Length: 258
Image (cartoon, rainbow, N blue to C red; front, side, top):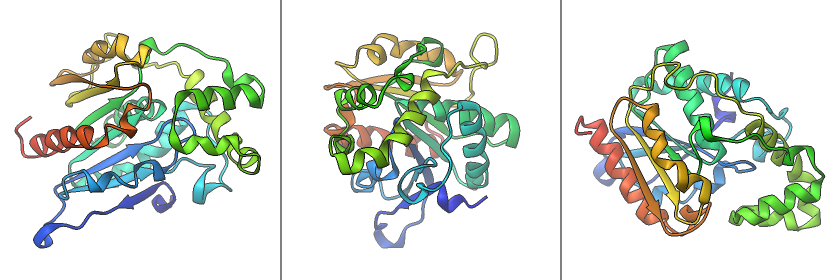
């Protein structure tokens, strides 16, 4: 498997030639791409290597078949991430990406014996609270309307006819993946993760805000929630504050302080 097709690295200049202490893998939202995270190294501590996941069917992977099943997505992604466990490996996922991150973390441990250093989930309710949806079964206009209502800056391209036909297959696939997602491994039926877990959300993002505290049942280690002003894509405006907190947690956990 060619992991370069799955991962893009965004590097920041390291002062005095310092080395990487931890890896942060970022998983985009439905319809999202690695470019959503391209500016993150400007705000993250330079000792953290930033990698972003490119799901099949977008950017350099337009020719790859899309994935519409959570089990397949998490299995294939975990196979790519497993070799990266030679350094502390942290996962950050926003919206759909958070659910994928949770499932991939379980596969990493159960299949490859690789325990992530920690998990950051953003803008989503915990798996047992994610409701089944049917937007992916509706027409193109319904998907476009729902995506634009969420407010992701990059999704504005869907309003342009020349981009709409090109981008819609990936959006529909992602909607099908998350709307048909039914977790099979959730506490108390299965053991919680043994890693730190932090849930971030926007105060106006109703589902994520309502159920954020219930993410605590998914880890036996330290758990935390943190709110920022804004809606589902609060992190577009709050990136400096979010990443300052994230940097602190990654480095503290990597150095054995968290």
